[in-house]
Image (cartoon, rainbow, N blue to C red; front, top):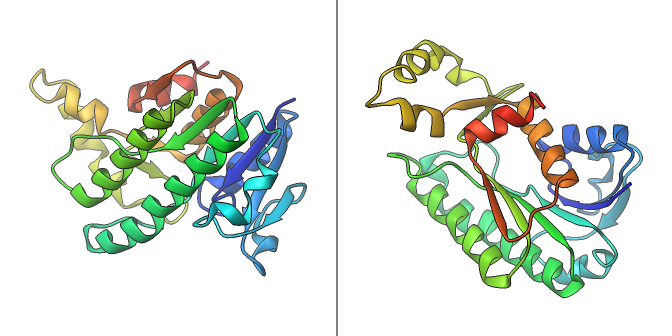
Length: 216
């Protein structure tokens, strides 16, 4: 059983991940703002704090085996560039600082697939997050999905036939796989895999690796 610290545990991926971690026998400490505790799955050790300010939760990171950082702006779009810098960038900076000070053995970060012709501001912020992790010298697993299909996140389903074709053409195969779609269950399984198989240095899981993790 591992002790897992989670930021963003009340979000799209976080709730499903925490439930799966409980099923696997792990314990979870999760950050929540005052008044938002009920959004976390039952069984969490709730840490009241602000994920944008590591000082509000850092003392609770000590003793954890893995830090999973899932904070981010909901439904990213090119119109949310300022929010990415105010939320995504600030939160990963706080998380890396807290994990480094606590000596957490393994850090798990959901980044984004790149390069890509769109979402440049989002990619830039997530890439900065990756660089912070490397600069801190953390052992880490960095997952790079492009779009995670799930409840209220289904509009790209209409693109599946186009993906099918592009994955079979030599000139578009690499990009279509790297920028492919994954499901929420696939993503959660890949996160659990990252938690239970700690990396040395920085390990990158692109879309094909995320998909394969769900088959193991």
